[in-house]
Image 1 (cartoon, rainbow, N blue to C red):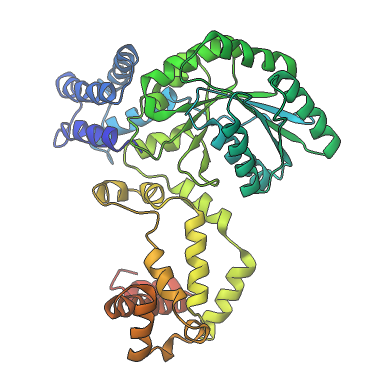
Image 2 (cartoon, rainbow, N blue to C red):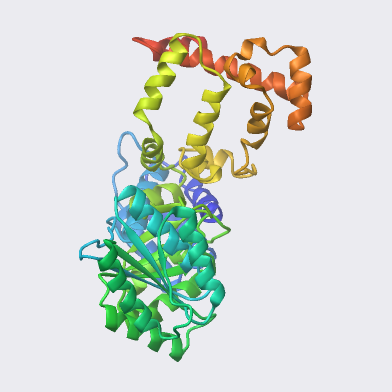
Length: 443
């Protein structure tokens, strides 16, 4: 996400390194590179120019703080301005109403139907809502089927009328059905086109007028860059939507849409899609995104994701097993599954300060744990619970069953032993200090 923009901004800030004071000359050279980086990210020229002018006004004559050098001071100014450019404050979704009606809009191929499912999953699991998905794309039978597949996947009911070609009627009937069945949130998926046309815009305007949604979200593919911003403006002129959803931010996006859509339509980005899984949805935080763009990571989001997967009862159970030297590969598998639920690996690495830059040329596969899982699944239940019994003969059998080598088995066993020791040392008072000693670190 934003790797190219991050790299170019980092190079721009290098110009100031070694200077003791921000001057008009060195800041002008840096901001020229910043503006170039924004234009390469498909940011509108006027917005890029206004953005760098604001930074210049704040930077010229600014006293360099005792703990900061000029490049660090400018990074802070840029971070604050990026945050404002992307909306400033985090915007929540409006969940008032019984039921709350959320209307999804956007072009075909933007990821609208998939995101409707992600939003339903998010509201169900994180907001304790009872959502109903509604299929109002009457032109593509595949879209209706796709929504049913998504609904089955996340355990959410999908309302559809395959023989009815009137989307306004379907939407109104769905709301009646929601009230009758105790559903408190209705998410309406609408038809899209490959480009904006009068028929589509009239249709969604009619649905909007008929159901009076509490929240209208415009879904846009972030990989379309500045075109996404232009499309958002056209939809907003018709619908006056409440917020924007950016999908496919895990792809090769230049970032222009995320950076400028708020300043063009004056509507906040509310959610982002960061992968294909139903859990790959994040509330959009402008300040956190600015930090990620500037290579500062996003520790807060990382901790939040970890907390979402944290199971207190499971943690206590694991703690007891560690204390009794009974921590086995079945327990290890459960830990892996919790990590995988946190999101795609590349996204998680990008949240660690400095790690995104270090790992930028490393291909981090979502199946990074696949080999480890194959090895563990090739063990017998006894071997998983008592790793100490795994001898050379057993290793050969496990390697054959998992399509790996004895060397890879040995490596996993070594890592598992080290991790078990660390986890045991972490138990009780002074645990952190003992682990740092073992690793040769400082107390």
